[in-house]
Length: 250
Image (cartoon, rainbow, N blue to C red; front, top):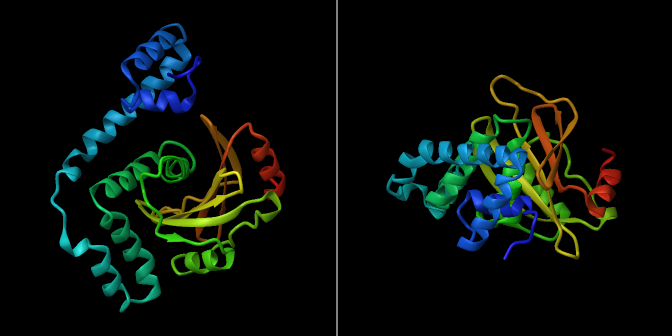
């Protein structure tokens, strides 16, 4: 049973048809008397319908044996690092199966809505919901930096968040319309997660000024460097968020 007023997680579950019948009626009663929240939920529903319509043909495609992760890894051993950055990420994102490809495509479509919306959606799918599995796991920051450097040369170094109690634990490669992307998940001793997200600015070289925006329960701090766009995604309005902002100098 959900509590009132419903949280953003409850509202997302409502949009995704994940609530029980009783909880669904409770949310609908709440939305009927809160038009501003109802308007936001309707926008989410329209986005979800658009995504389902756009991706329905992709989801019906048969599995391609050439996208098997083992076959891909063997093929990519013989290619250059630069080719690996563009081709391997795409194939690995699709190679996990239809669901992984669907979710990676969803991130791409949402990225046009607002600055680094793809970073926020990736956090929800990977750090919160665990829909997409990690490509790399480690408890060592040096190893994680080495993994990231394989695909993103001359990129900013991973933020050192040890003073705030966080260390990088897993990485996930993604494919976006702008090019190969990656998300590194940090975690503290209590299990709280935040993320570092990187992708190229796209063919139009759309670089971002340093900025911040809130989306529901999450806060995105974003910026650009030579050749890449970046975002840190953290839970908003928590003591952890305030400590991280001080550590990151945002």
